[in-house]
Image: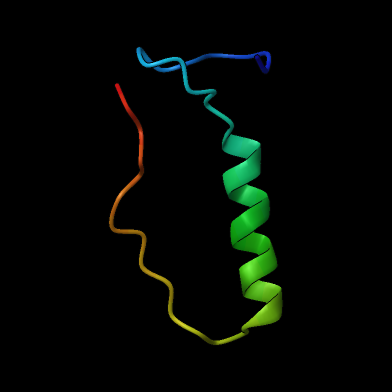
Length: 43
């Protein structure tokens, strides 16, 4: 299991991973609007 905080269901909370994903998407698709509609956390 990865280090760091976890949800009640045991999922690792990795904010750096989300940030890297968003930066990669921005680099690959400049100018493309992006809307996050669900955070997927299992609190």
